[in-house]
Image (cartoon, rainbow, N blue to C red; front, top):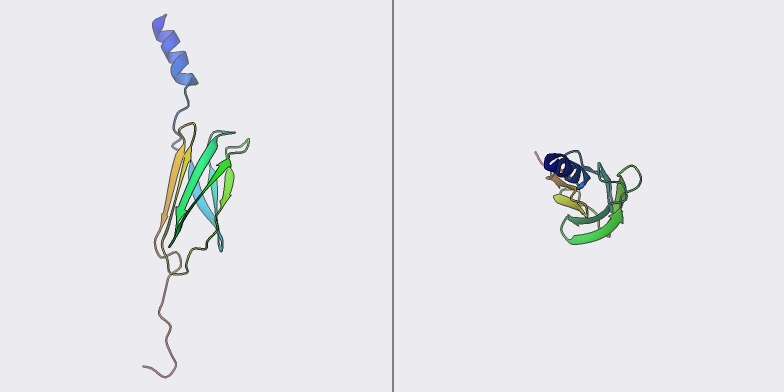
Length: 110
């Protein structure tokens, strides 16, 4: 009987999601789409790309959200985003050299 009660309690507790994901939807200004969160979960999203910012959003009925930040990701810069939900869901995204940066060449130099 105790095992049954314990199993029910464990199922009722929010479990961190292994399927939560983040994806950049825009770089100027930075916008990130989160998915795989608990529907209605409050999520604290922090991003850094030369400067830091954080926003708070609520996942929709499908466990998704869009977080918009006040800065852009530099063309040759690095960025990271971390989302932590109030019910234990979390996801991270780390980008290095978001766009391949090739030094400009002048026509006269060879």
